[in-house]
Amino acid sequence: MVVSANVYNSLKNSGKFKVSENNGREVLSNGLLEIGEYWIQLGGVYKLDNLLEESVVIKGVRYITLEFLYKVKKSWVKEDAIPRQKDMEDVKLIENYLDNKE
Image (cartoon, rainbow, N blue to C red):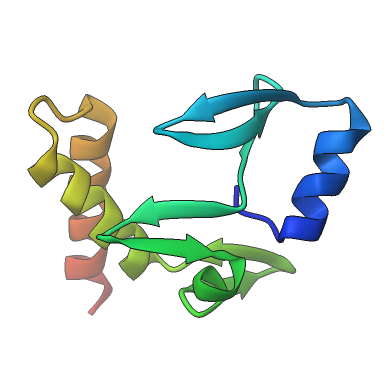
């Protein structure tokens, strides 16, 4: 999950999250969520403002678009020496959905 710097610092100071590292960046985690101020994907750094441009609101909850998720997952499958099975399955599911959507 990507949040603004203000929200991140507030959560960090709340004592409810463990500060850890993921791919060289500081994140907060509680076993269920991983929260950071940015996400490095597709050769870029995506802060909250950038991700808002790649998002959609469904029933009051903001998500990244399926198209953006597809690009990210597809890049993981191509770039990783041994891609995760879950990512390969997700790519196929998204492709099937998009093919049948039209």
